[in-house]
Image 1 (tube, one colour):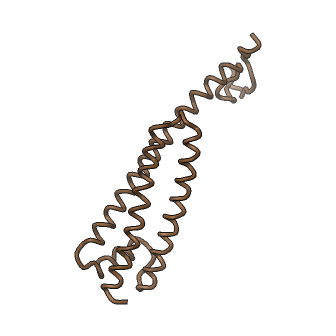
Image 2 (cartoon, one colour):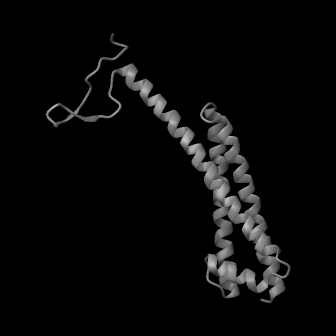
Length: 159
């Protein structure tokens, strides 16, 4: 393949990846706004995220195949070498940089959403442990340093 054809095909690939990561960022932000209140909407968002992840995975596979067809390694270094070779006007490099930033944004938003879910889960577990008279941490130690487990409290429901 020549530089121009490589440029066009790689540009199309990067455009698809950018579109999918933009959609993923929007979904993650939407998810963050409704956490943990609306479980039905969360399930729908989860399905949409899975669909986008499959599309992104396919884009990654297609990009790697394209790189190999161009004679480059199917990794970040190969992609960057290919971009350096065929980028006629700096647009491919710009798209690649934008894609990397979007991936960072996805990762950050996903971690933030996960933290919110973990926090909510802890609150629910604490409330249930109080309600049922269970200890939050199953294994504790007695005065002699022996491991102790089991239910030492009484359930509020039984009180």
